[in-house]
Length: 302
Figure 1 (cartoon, rainbow, N blue to C red):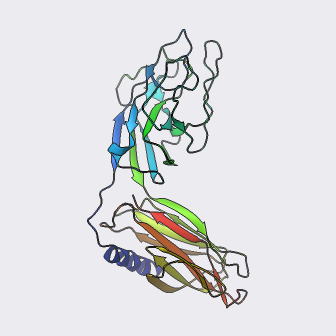
Figure 2 (figure 1 turned 90 degrees about the vertical axis):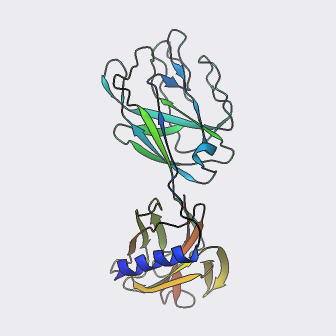
Figure 3 (figure 1 turned 135 degrees about the vertical axis):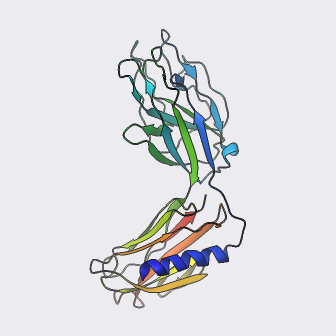
């Protein structure tokens, strides 16, 4: 029953957001085993990483990139088994010489900071504060939000000695795909267990799974999901109605632990760069007007 309601809600979103279908924006970029944007020891040799244009990919600040590493390379001692990619956003295409620590003068901080290793020769520092992981053999897929001011992305290998790197089968690369950006925008109203939490998951690409999950709500309580195409942030039942109430779905019911999961499949045809707003309201006598509310949640489509 819940799955059917969620599926109907997604169909309703498609009808209300009348626009031409949007294809997933993906760029596959081959990489060399010596591609590098960090400092290199004077006795070593690497190759300058090439800046990838974000406008070519059609990605803007605030959107999220799924970064997927492809293939592997040979770092000398370990054979053709190494996948260890890092990246940094930049405002421009400038990459300074290999003896300079901050080789990307237009670097813009994003993602979780990654600390690069000192050079094998001389133990020289290579780390800059703005870069992040792109892919590893253990975790070949990472996600990062594009920061304001970013126009280019440098992707390189993480290594501390470069002269012996090779790629015998030529399969090293990275695939970048614009995917959904989910954000908690606050506005919740506490009930018997505090402020319920609403989270979303899914890439918002046509045919992919999407899930809204509610936690910390009153057990076995009726709930209603508001969905909007714009924010409202209006006073409502002692709290704040975050979405404009374009769609009201329910009633649903939380389980004995105060959880509710609404799964579905994202429809094709939803336009790109569309922000959807979600909020759950839960029947709860501990609320000022008999209701508690989750945080507001937004989803920016790719």
